[in-house]
Image (cartoon, rainbow, N blue to C red):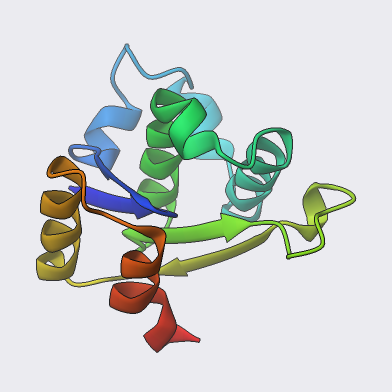
Length: 130
C-alpha cells in the first residue's frame, strides 16, 4: 500500500499484517487498545518534536503511516504546525484523506525520479480537499 505523509510517499505493505508482525515496534495488544484519537495525538507529538519527521526519520514516519492506515481508511496525511509555529502538540493540524492509487503512484514515480515537490503534492492532493 502506498501512503502519502506530507510530501513523502511510503510503501507500507499491508498495514494490518505489518502491525501484527514481530518487527513492528508496537505490540498487537497496545495497537489494538489505541483509539483513532490516540493515534492522531501520537502524530501530533512526533511532528511537534520534529516537524521534518518524514525526511529526518523516514522509518518512524513510515511506522506512523502504517498505524494511521490500519486505524482509518486514509492513505494520505498532511500534518504540521500552523505558519506561526505550535506552542504545543495540540496545535499540530492533521488532515487525513483517501487519495486515488493513480495519484499516489504518480507521486511515487516523481519521488523516485527526484522531481517530487511540496507544491506538486499540494496541487495533486491537498488543494482540492480544502
